[in-house]
Image (cartoon, rainbow over all chains, first blue to last red; front, side, top):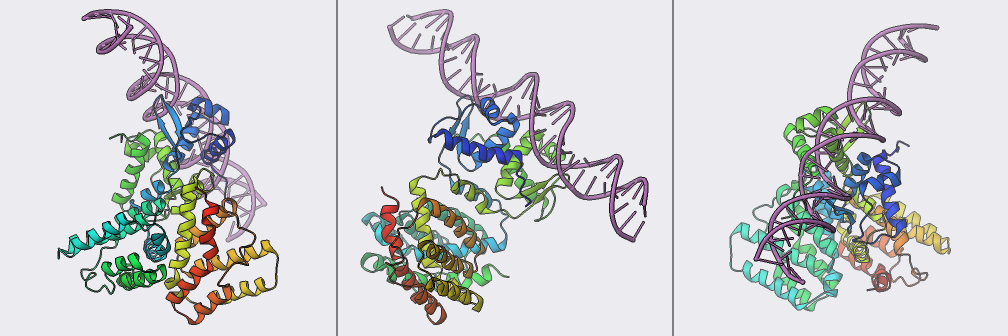
Length: 224
Length: 224
DNA sequence: TAATTTTATTTGTAGTACATATTAGTTGTA
DNA sequence: TACAACTAATATGTACTACAAATAAAATTA
């Protein structure tokens, strides 16, 4: 038991409790700092430390004179800071890389649930552009766009936000090999074809094959 | 452009930059608060606010007298606060629920990569216990244990930590229907059998069927 | 040498004061 | 009256100081 939360941490939880008890809604304003400090029985310094922690989690936003208002907490607020700080260890990076592979294969059902013409057109557009270029960098950009469109098509906003983060992350930390495009077994065209008139199960099999190079490269990307 | 970061936020980034520039490693100690405040040119109050924000992200740990030491940032530190705060909106909850389904289906390859006797035995143990009880609550607990074991078997620590969070989350926010067990198409036994002598593709198909009730209940769990 | 007490240092907390930005009100002019 | 410019009030942002509490390291004792 080495818990012993610091007062700022306790205050952080107290504030959340206070919000819940008082039934505050999104957009509502909290009492001003001096009042809230008195209510919770802490100094304003500590209160501000707690508020600062809640702010990094996206629970609140504060503006001079207007005060502190409740906002919808954003999971990715904090994650982003971590991912872009460059302090993630290799294991954590590999974990995230794997998670992305799982998600791309596992999202099949949701793609078919939200299959809409606009998405299919967007995917086709990417494929058309791919067929008109040989530039490696451009192809990489298009590949990211293709998969990014799939995430959007999943209809899961949190997931979409997450993968946007991962994109920026792996662009720096896990650059692709030059021959990634050549070695692909299943093309984007095939994937789109299955999306149009296939099944989730078929899509999963195809996507697994499409990502085959990613699976194979994992060992070299994240050596022991 | 409503950027205008507060000084504490700027300081937070300054600290990360300082760490990177000085080449600090995990476990290294930062300068003491007074020194660091002077180095960065801010008051100790502001510095502490910045440190507090970094602490909630798991970048640092501080102890009286010993000072501030670098730790491996923990993505789930902040996520946990958000998930357990009870302020998540329905959309975000549904998103997370969906993500879990994706992961369980998408993790197949990694299960086969890390297939070890101890995991298979643990799974078998759960199944044996399931066969000896009819109590609904016990069965729910065992079901969670079965799937939790799978996450562990995936060899992905971040993922395992994540699903532990989700378990506590959905235990409160998305309780099961009473008939969930009866309606399952594919049993845990079948899943284990496939793990022993099947393929990732086969496992994905089976897991999708196993989770069928979850997919079907989503509409009632998270109504529009 | 080992156990115990002391002390020195560093984080944790509080109070106060003032700077700064923004809203609301007030005045002044057409 | 309407509208602009200025003024005052107010809440957050920042800084400084002082002291409490914990604990690692040094000193003391058995």
